[in-house]
Image 1 (cartoon, rainbow, N blue to C red):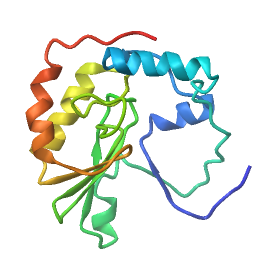
Image 2 (cartoon, helix red, strand yellow; image 1 turned 30 degrees about the horizontal axis):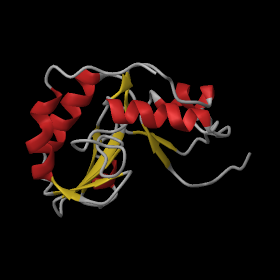
Image 3 (tube, rainbow, N blue to C red; image 1 turned 135 degrees about the vertical axis):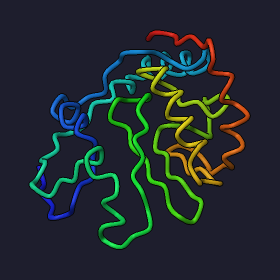
Length: 168
């Protein structure tokens, strides 16, 4: 396990997940294509979502307690709380009308309507989209896929009303 002097910015809920060393499989898949994709990768023995231990140093900034951290150090950006995919999901809103949303949205296979494959909490996920839509962002940079305009989230937001998740 390596140690770094780098400052790590994370949500306080991430600490427990990092100790567990795997994603939680609660909630479900956002659509049937995503469910089939997850089942397929499982057959290939690639769907465990296990990661190596992380040595958390004292250089940690809790995003949910210091969302203005970047502004304090002179960078015109805000940390956004974007739970739903996971309870510890965060993003970054830049003053230049850009948002790096991590896994709050997706723009490649097997995403439908910019939804991420797995969602732990659908209500939180919908609220995170509302947060992104009400931000100043004009372009969204997802963790998976190519950037897309915010108008895509606006267009697809109501497709989540009454949505059901497909348990793994």
